[in-house]
Structure formats: C-alpha cells, structure tokens
Image 1 (cartoon, rainbow, N blue to C red):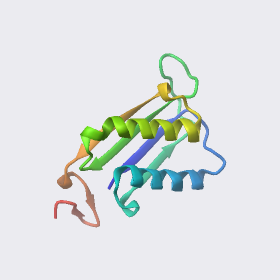
Image 2 (spheres, rainbow, N blue to C red):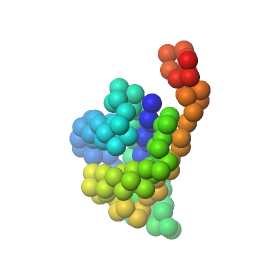
Image 3 (spheres, one colour):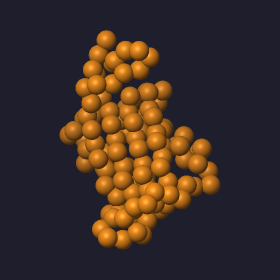
Image 4 (cartoon, rainbow, N blue to C red):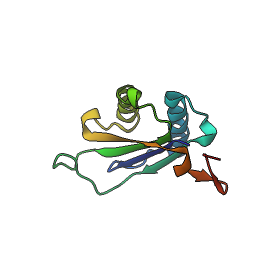
Amino acid sequence: MPTFAIYTNVSKPEDTEQFLKETSKFVSEILGKPEKFVTVRFHPDQLMTHGGSTDPCGSVELYSIGLKTEKTNEYTQAIGDFIANRLTIPRDRFYVNFSNLERNEVGIDGKTFAV
C-alpha cells in the first residue's frame, strides 16, 4: 500500500500521465511491492521555498506498511536520482520523509490490512 507524494514548485511535465506511470513502477520496484497497491500523488506548481529560495524544490513523502527502515538511505539515493533526473530538481533541494505504517493503520475496501 505504498503512497508516494511529490510536492514541488516545478510545473507538471508535458507527459504527466507517463510520469505518473513511471513513478508508480519505480516505487513498486524499489520497495519490492506489487504495483497494484501503489498510489502516487503529484502536486506540481506549489508555492514553496527551500533554504530561503524559490528555485526548483520539493518535498517527497513515502508511506508504506513494512517500510524497511534499514534501507532508507538506499531509498533516499534512488528517489533522489529519480526526482533529479525526471523533474530536474537538484538532489539538495528536496527532503524525503518516510513513514512506516502498521497494518491496522491502513484500510481499503472496508477493512484494514490487519484482517
């Protein structure tokens, strides 16, 4: 059930649908989770600053059940490369925030994943 949210002051790419699909596949691959459970939220054109500058910047959030905290450095590297390459935001212009969720904290189709 990974949810990957990108907030940025950069405008959306012309190929937004392709970008969303690539991002979904990317998240599935780095976490080793089925893509059918991945949600991607993309919020371009945000009013944002980072380090006192309105140069291209962003904020990335990754929520998942069973997020392997020992791999957050690896995830940060991969996410940094992906965002820098795909949205041309320098790697030092966005944070990546991780949230490991318990199965009983996430529900779908009228029940939680704890059932």
